Length: 123
Length: 157
Image 1 (spheres, chains in turn purple, blue):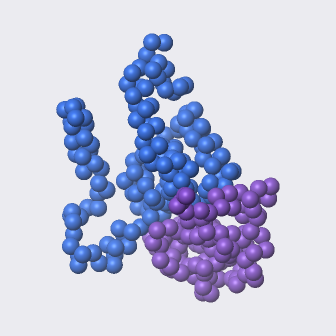
Image 2: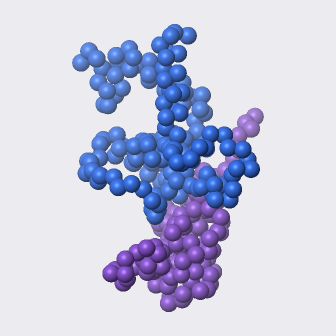
Image 3: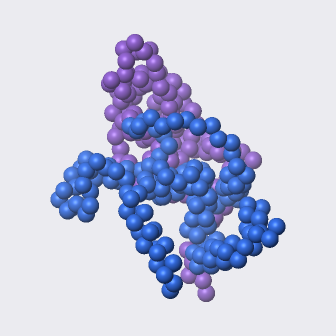
């Protein structure tokens, strides 16, 4: 008798084959909390073990430019958990907001990146 | 055990000591009360490729991909295609789980290749004993001059 742990090793391939990832999670995140144009601040959530939310965006305020896709957050997906799907937002920051020492000469410079909904609060 | 093995083992221990990440302060076995919140967060930070960390300038070097690198990439994609892992599991294993020293020091596709082996052990497609036995067998084959497939031709060729 085998005492190995059992799980469906191919569970992700089963839902994504022929559809793609993150397209296979479309419609699973429910109503988005934010919309294009909203000003949001990035929460400084714990970064223990895994995160893809850049340290330099934490505490900074940016503007949502697009709702990009629905997907499990990296923190879950990195350990094979795909049950909780959430909205990802493309957010634009001024470089000045992210890097206090950024030159005033280039004050129009921006940075755009994708962040899951759990990190966002209304600014 | 032969003395050459002892020499290699002792050299390995010394090299490992040299590779410890420089934190610009004494970090050898700090007492628990010396680890404040700032140091705790620094110790538990996860190596990643999303950028934004201070570093010295390094020279950008153009390098063509080698056959073993392309084969490694294809192997890892096949593991994803057959549902063994997702891209995020792969990134976690090859960036975070290897530790900061290996993250900065190992070749990029070296980390991919190590991680492909690691996921097969973690998800029990092979046992670590089987992997160790295979490595041991291949080392012996190379030592005997029999080569290693397309990457290392036999000595007598």
